[in-house]
Length: 430
Image (tube, rainbow, N blue to C red; front, side):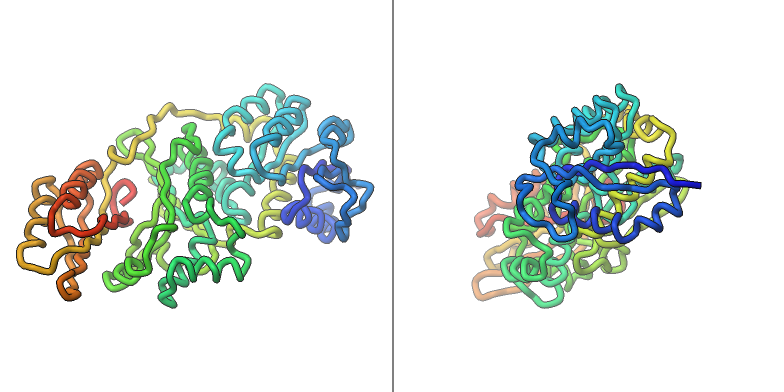
């Protein structure tokens, strides 16, 4: 039986786009045997069609988006160019013309996802986005297919490989933030401008997508408060290790009293926890289900070949799926409210620089007691007339903790701005 030929129009031909072309070229026969479809690439939208790209037919390259979007021979549009503008308009044009779309664009989906899904639904076509979060790890497929009826209660993960590599180096080698960033850039894990990685924005965009699917709730990028590791001190990584914790940049979303809490921040993770063992540039997502228990997915969360494998997987899913079934789930909205940080409970780590004299710890402890917060661990290290006071608090009200820290910071014996990190554990985000 002869295979059906399907032409792929490609928007963008950077690292991921070239990897998609290479994958279809090298594994086209295997894909054809398994799926019954012969996938062909072209045309390809690029900024500079005249520049040589080894392995790619120059005749396929164009700087005219109409050649991709308006070509009746293009069966599926794959977007790997990134950005919001003009990408949003290109995808709108593709969807409104009835062409299925596969995208790896986490920033676009986390901001404009509902709008794009509605466009696809109106046109009766598909919008797939597995590659937008965690690259080769099939977490979106697991959430919306394998665990669709599994009552997901929490999604907690290491969603950024750059920062996980940096934190691993800071813990293992005692490197400073600056030295670990330089090491990540030398290894190719960090971009020349690593801002969205190190400040938490990259992980927040991915979490918005994952929590929208997991909880059937419209969570956008602006709904996810985030903090990064760009102000994290090697001293706090070392203190955490002494106390039995690893520091990880965690994305955490969960159901709390009928609402959805979602945030990204560096957290202390107990060394016995599954996520504490994830090292290097790997990503990991821990799914907590009321019916299936805990399921953890681990693997490379970035890279051209890894992302390309998710893109091609989405293309094949489109060819083998009844039209509209994927969108129906992606558009589902349970109407759950989104909770602010002060509406949930968490455990916390606190480091203070204080005067080394009697009564300081008692003053600090008194404030936390008045806010009905319990101290789990205290470590005090003297340094002449100064001392480092490190506390780990049991889970309690985040609003009460913030009030207590503001009061502690006003004490005459507290000499620097307190350092605060969340602690992963039982309860919402901690």
